[in-house]
Amino acid sequence: MNKQTIGVIIVLLFLGVFVFYWFSRTPSVPAGSSVSVPEEGQLVEFEKINNISLDAEFFRDPFFTALKEFPTATGTVHYTPGRANPFIPF
Image (cartoon, rainbow, N blue to C red):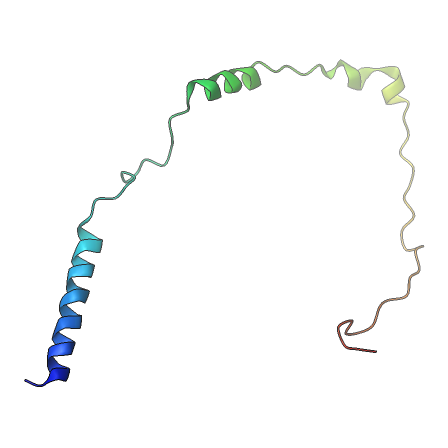
């Protein structure tokens, strides 16, 4: 056997050990469990969010219902477009 053949065998051995190690290790997260358990502080915040109540009475207020929507002006802005390629020197 020449030196090149021995080198190839050594490289293949290292590659085989690496592949075996890579595929035989246990996953850090068990399969199928993508949900994390909330901590105590997070549970308090979730409870605060759950207890929020919105008062929709504002939308029935006469001042709110008297508001009018003004039309927006479209197409009235005239501007000069820039150069075709702004990165080329003058």
